[in-house]
Amino acid sequence: MTLFYSDLYTIPLPEGHRFPMEKYRLLREALTERGLFTEEEIRPAVPATEEQLLLAHTPAYVRSILDGTAAPAVMRRIGFPWSPALARRSMMTVGGALGAADEALRSGVSANLAGGTHHAMRNEGEGFCVFNDQAVTALRLLSGGRVRRVAVVDLDVHQGNGTAEILGGRDDVFILSMHGAKNFPFRKVPSTLDVELADGTGDGEYLSALASALPLVFAFRPDIVLYQMGVDVLKEDALGRLHLSLDGIAAREQMVYGACRRHGVPVSVALGGGYAKPIAHTIEAQLRSFAVLRSVFG
Image 1 (cartoon, rainbow, N blue to C red):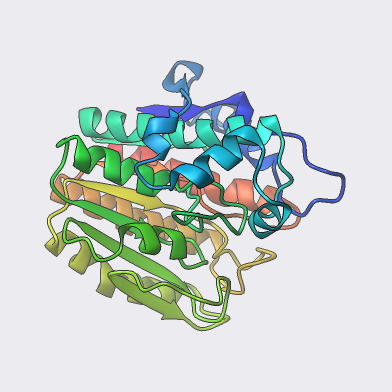
Image 2: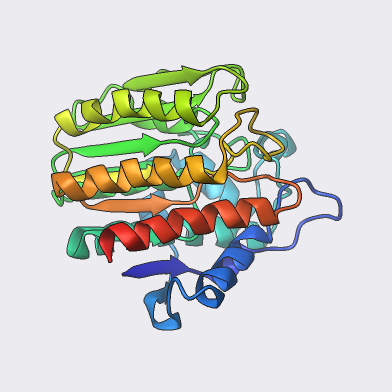
């Protein structure tokens, strides 16, 4: 099994910034320290090209991010200050997603140890999302004839408004977003199937809702699943407002990965959100997900 990672996923932020940038490095270290993956199974990501970014984003927006001319208001909406490192990181994050999808089509499963930037829209970013890695990936696979149908399974606690804005309305893409009803973003863009959850939803109700939704994904007969495994559904998450336990997250992953395996559909995984304080709770939840991934796919 191959995972994709880059040291560029972690970049300096101003002191006191609320985004836990160190989580990417901490997860990558923990995966090998716990013995879940070997160093040989973690492959360097390759940055996306500008041409690939243009599959999902407008030329003016892409160029403004790459050359640093994005207006201050644009960067405030994203939530990061512009820097050359941010531009490189954003391209690398998408590149890792493209690599993981290619590997998933080859071997059945792969993951990018970053990504899930589902708030980025065609002409703007928001919510710590610059370029939409899953939208770029889906459009690259479809436009190149690699697949005929793509399913995006987005279980981050926040609705994937950018993914829906870019990919919504296509008959070759099915988007499931299961998220907090009253959480960010406050202007949601309809997915193919949106499952809205009340604040405080726990393991039982959450897993029941997922069990009802997943069959609709596979009835679409996708050729690949792009899975956003956000662990900001965890009870300890600072931005989540749901109450899943670590065992609940493991059960969720068993349902998703198990369904992909049973239906013979390749799955490419993106991290999505995780904002627990301390960040160790997020890392532990992510490790649970990867332990299930390993157990299901070997």
